[in-house]
Amino acid sequence: MTISWLQAVLLGLFASLSSMPDMGGSSIGNYTLGRPLIGGLVCGIILGDMSTGILVGCSMQVVYIALVTPGGTVSADVRAVSYIGIPLAMVALGSYGLSAASTEGAALATSFGTMVGTLGTVLFYGTATINLLWQHIGWKAVEKRQYKKLYLVDMGLPWISHLACSFIPTVIMCKMGADVVEMIKKALPMDGIAMKTLFTVGALLPCVGIAILLKQIVKQVTDFIPFLFGFALAASIGINLVSATVVAAMFAIINYKIKMLSVNKAAVAADGFDDDEEEI
Image (cartoon, rainbow, N blue to C red; front, side):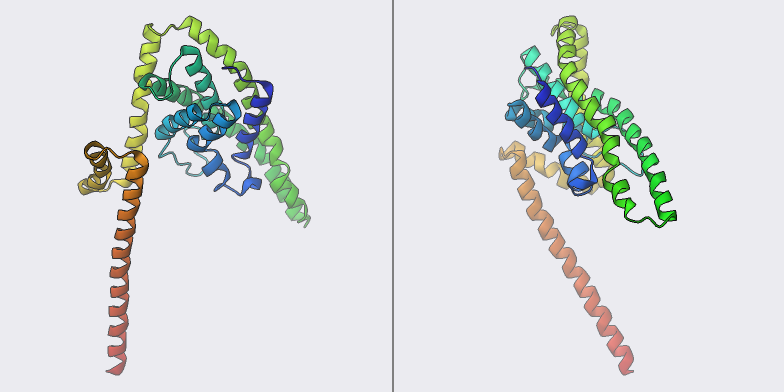
């Protein structure tokens, strides 16, 4: 598989749009288009192999499933993972003749995503640094009461930041990275120690994402029971992840209804106590 200039430009455009406020803010940009799960679909459509793109995106999404960005602290840039890591991983899978559904293919994909995600932090902080210039212009406009100028500062000038730190690097790395993947293939054969190490480390990376997620949601030992329930269903009934999610959603609704009944009863009891107090 090779990546043409047109495909690289489209990937660069989506890398920029995944964080632009003009796309609907963080909800549509960063937290939708920028996620590897959605990025895999987009990359698959652009590169003409939707199934491989989705499978690679799923593999990378597990690693970053619990990624949060408190303040300006970012451990990995998922935009780079989605629109640089996924295309290069697809090229690598094609070069090595691996299927994205295989264990080796998933391990190779997650390894590429992790490497690019770490590199992407440089691009993220570069964007943030350039945006400080536009912020300074915005403060000057406020001081001079030139409020209409804020539209340019908020929705126009940030395009320069993302063109410099998202669009151009993505285009170059996606186009030129295919040749680098070919060089890696020749230098690191499949049966070599380096590739075997890469596969082993890559296979363990999803465990890191799941562990971080559990650290956030598990507060006591009994919280593991709902988490393991899905695996029990998959092992005993043979349902897939989508079916397990639907079952989990049903239990979540039931739990929500029970919680709301308890809240309503407490509110009614409190109102009744107040009425009795007024009568006395």
